[in-house]
Amino acid sequence: MPHGSWFSFLPFHDRFVHYAAEHFGQDGGTWIEHGPVGVEHVYGGLFVLSLIALFAVVTDTSLYNAKSVVPENKLTIRTFMELMVETIFTMMSDVMGKKAARYFMPLIGTCAVFILFSNAIGLVPFFLPPTDSLNTTLALGLVIFIATHIYGLKENGTAHVAHLFGPWLGPLGLPLNILLFLIETVSHLVRPCSLAIRLMANMMADHMVLTIFLGLVPFVVPLPMYVLGTIVVIVQALVFSLLSTVYIGMAIEHADH
Image 1 (cartoon, rainbow, N blue to C red):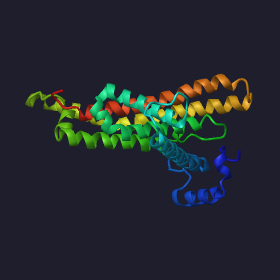
Image 2 (image 1 turned 120 degrees about the horizontal axis):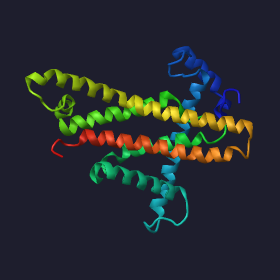
Image 3 (image 1 turned 120 degrees about the vertical axis):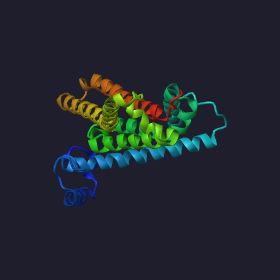
Image 4 (image 1 turned 45 degrees about the vertical axis):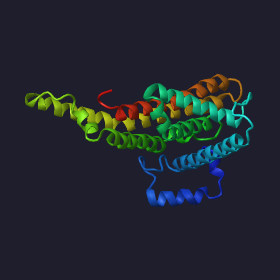
C-alpha cells in the first residue's frame, strides 16, 4: 500500500491530498495529521457514515415490512442494530433514567454506533480506523462537551455554573470557593481531551499491533490478536458512551436529587 490504506487507490486521492496540503499544510497538529495518511481518516469517516446510513435504511425497511415486532431468530442487519440500540439504551437508563435515556439516545447512540463501526473497520487489513486520529476523536469529545453544558444550563440555569464553586462557605471561605471553581473548570475542560486521547491512543495501539503481527505471519499468529482487537473495539465504544452518559447525566441532574 503506498500510503497504508485501500483509500489510496481512490481516483481523486492525489488531487485531494494536494488541495488539503496547499490550504491546510502538512505540519503536525493540523487537520491533515501525519501528511497524506490524515486525509485517509476523512475517507474512513465518510465510509463509516455511508455504512451506517445503509444499515439504518435496511433496518427501517425490515421493520416496516415485518409481520411481527418479535425479533428474528437469526443474525441479520436488523437484529444486529436492534441489539445495539437495546444495549446502549439499557446502559443509559441505568445511569440517567429511562426518560433522559430516551431523550439523549439519538446523540449518544449515534456516537456509539459511529465509534463502533469506525473501530471495527480497523480490523480489516489495510483499512485505517477514523478513530485512531485525534481529529476524529476530539470532534466527538467536543460534541459531548458542548451538549453537556447546553443541556446543563437548560435544566438547571445558573445553578449549573454555581455548583462549580462548591457549597457556599461564607465570606471567609470565598478564596476556597474560587479555588474549587478553578479546579472544577479545568476538570470540565479536560473531559473532551480525555475522551479523545483515550479513544485515539487505544485504537492507534490496537491497529499498530494488528498491522505488525499481520506483516510477520499473515494467517496463524494474528488470530488471537484479532480476538483481542475485537474486544478493544467494543470496549472503547462502550467506555466513550458510558462516560458521555455520566457527564450529561450529572449536568442535567437537579440539585435536590
